[in-house]
Image (cartoon, rainbow, N blue to C red; front, side, top):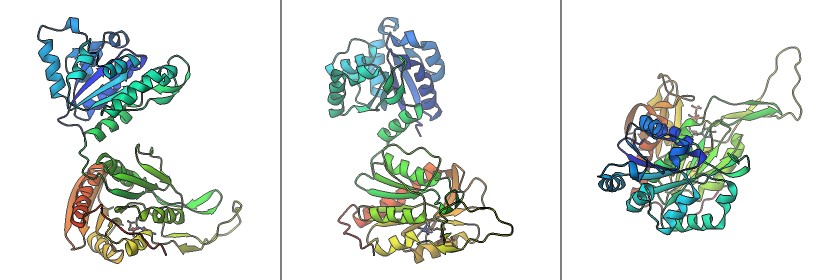
Length: 410
Ligand code: CTP
């Protein structure tokens, strides 16, 4: 995700400085070119050699060890950076930047950059909550500096509280979000994901193998592109994506209610969830005991959520999925017409690397005119991005977001 991006990573002198090694690796693995500036105190916690080895670039450790051309060096670093990340950021560096102090290489270079700056504070809870530190954070946020809030947990000083450096994945996600153009800003995108569970006694249910990965990839990608995202999700083992409005549900009936609650406010609805078509007609209050012979469970039909949305959607863009094992194109196109969708993403379950549990998928995207686009096997994040390109075009054609009008739920 970060190919061709130049990240300048500033490391300051806190115990979390050791985590900057993993952060460097995370950025490099994503294809970024990482240049590191360490304050002198940071070199007490982790060696420049470690970071030089991991980044594959020279590390600027302090002003005195630099060659005569450092002035040019730090300005060119400041100019070349697509983004500046300071992790961990001490109260000291936050205070310096907020006060316009530039007395070492890191603070000087930050002062000289026009790139976005992401500051990741990590410190003792009392320090973090100190009103001077909070005032500095507010002041910097107000003028466009980005912050990742520290996490709660046990701190190096053994106290419990807010102050831990977030995970490398969390910081990476912020970096990608900051660097992604916000072409979906203004769109309210409602996404469903995961399986539903249809219980027949307090400990058992009928469900399917959906992992939620495809729907969550849509939520993450739409959020990165600036959309306001509501994710209605059945039970999955995935972490809740940061920055989305998350609505957890279990059964198809709960999913239907959650979707209907949000349709009016949405400009785009993407229904990725693998909704169970049937639910047990009866739910036993107590655990069903084993008896000799067979057990029959009568199933009744669940509402078809996307069909209900299709009837009331107005100009909203409606995208559905079709999971097929045969006649993909014909079945998918028929579903698109029957359920009044604008686009349908056909999932070819017969291809290796495609389907529920994989991080990749091989899909066809069909529009109302019957035009079919074939996407080769690619990551679910890339598929979401490409489908959102099509969604964006439809939004532009319809002048969305515009006045969508209310919907009649009944
Ligand atoms: N869908 C839905 N509500 C349901 C069943 C499906 O909203 N009760 C949505 C899915 O989220 C998906 C689309 O309908 O976007 C197609 O789902 P799929 O299971 O492939 O289609 P079905 O109409 O259930 O057809 P079948 O299972 O017979 O292939």
